[in-house]
Amino acid sequence: MKDYFAHETAVIDENCSIGKDTKIWHFSHIMSNCTIGKKCNIGQNVVISPDVILGTNVKVQNNVSVYTGVICEDDVFLGPSMVFTNITNPRSAIVRKDAYKKTLVKKGATIGANATIICGNTIGKYALIGAGAVVTKEVLPYALVVGNPSKQIGWVSEYGHTLTFNKDGFAVCKESNQKYQLKNNSVLKL
Image (cartoon, rainbow, N blue to C red):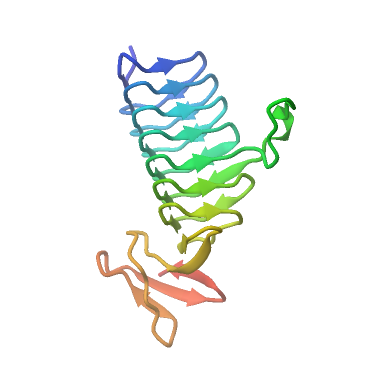
């Protein structure tokens, strides 16, 4: 007996590992050999390609394709219609499946609606990628990035609020009261 929910229109291929309390919604396709953790939510019209790994509590909104080579750690949020790539120079007539590049989305990161993540990059833990951004390079932990190509415009807390650092390099999240320190162009939660 399965301990996850899959809508009757969902297609789940062989050799998938799907964690307890995960929900898979309308017209989604879970392809072979992928791993989906516990308490994930896979929205409508989503494709999870072969060998993809999703951690615990990953939220994949409607119309997202998570391609082979992508790994999402725990608590990642993938906004509606955001896009991953897995090859830098695709051609219809040339098969390059052996050239797929890895993309790692670290714990707690959020990727906004309609953003594009160019393969081969790491999105740092708790980073926030703004809606419509095109990420072409690594994103630091806790970084707030926007635009095309994306650029960092600030830092965010684990709760997703902009951090304003004082002259000594300290900030407090307005929702959680967690404290952070900015040192050597990186943020540490205290």
